Image 1: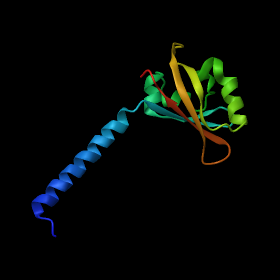
Image 2: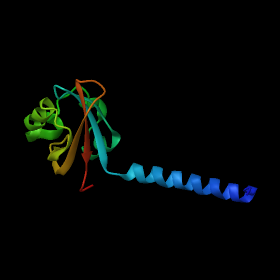
Image 3: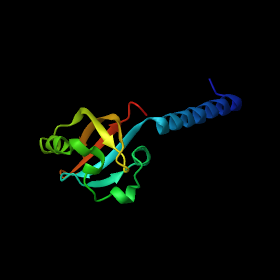
Length: 126
């Protein structure tokens, strides 16, 4: 059975609409990403986290995770040393102005090499 030109056009339109819907949905998911070294130095931070924490990515690059995790830094560094991956808990976050935000869930994954980690911050109160 062959597909008519009209059916093909309709299918292509529905496919394009589905992709657009998925892209919009993914852009709204409140998950941030921070890449750090094994010493707790921030290498990169995504736009969502930058916005939530009121940081300029260039101002935090090269800084300690103390800027973001405040009182939890030693605990997070210990998790990194022990190579604990996956969902590791909820941690209070601190904005550049020193304001504390509701806790975000933190998932930790290995980076591309053994000296880097990637943190996914899941903002449950965003």
